[in-house]
Length: 189
Length: 231
Image (cartoon, rainbow over the protein chains, first blue to last red):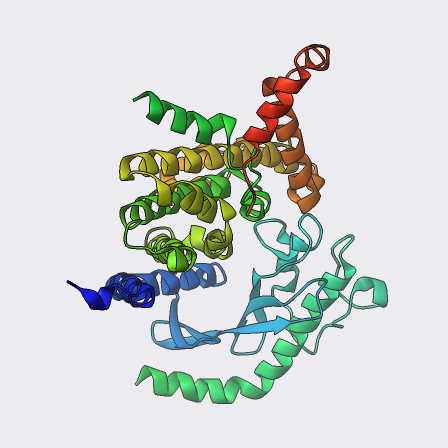
């Protein structure tokens, strides 16, 4: 009786198959809600950077468009650097149409707790130092090196990495804004 | 009934997975930085440990010796994956913080240890109680470490509890002191906290030096029985 089931390997394969079915079933049942959670979480993070009245529209993983009553007000794009103290730092940079910074938020980093993690808005407001800055009117270096930006005490490397990231982000945006506008128009239609 | 009492006493105290068996140290050390992460990971561990014990015990007659270990790992990995998905479904923001360690529960040796040492040799009911009490024992140590490290490292208690229970729990946050002692949040702080907790446990259960010489031999035996094989 049930000879095919006697071999241990058959049993293991059967068990694996069963596990696969259960996981797939749960995945399919929860997929949509999880995707929605992910988008909500993302948008909720980005909302902090803009006016409550504005809308955020998703273009792709790294680019969002902000608008108010159907007029584009700016863009939010992601930037990252490996020049921090430890691992990759990822941030959202919100700009208006004149390429002026509206706000920067770090959303992933592994900097030292208590020192480098002051780039995180929940730990310290330092990151707001970038608000309303523009690419050409400021010297994008730390004050210590003769620039216009304060660095975080004890975390010069982290601060420099952030300043550099925002600067390169703005340089990129300067070239890309026309393309992004096209994308926004296409996205809207 | 007494048997069940013994099993739960083993998991919660006398053979506690974290303090006596010293298994699953990776999640224990990494996640015990605050009460909310400790609580979340503790609950997931109880969930996975209980269910995997249950299933492994129920299937123990079908699982031949040659495939027992891979089958156990598969069962554990399945439940961890399910827990991971459910966590993303219900507590997405919390998952963003501890998600990495949830996946690592697979490597928590407490699970494979209990599956192999207990669930694969005992009745379903016993395996269930064993899973529950071992999970609870692990979770309580995790929670105690989370509390100590949150107070000393951050100066708060119950910070971010709303991630787990909803917005109403924001008020639970207690600010004890303005600034914490950062060292306690870093890995060395975890080792030191655990060290003190094991020392405290041994102080309470092992005989003192003055009593030691009298019944040294019997105590030695006792201790060697207490320490179960490590995996």
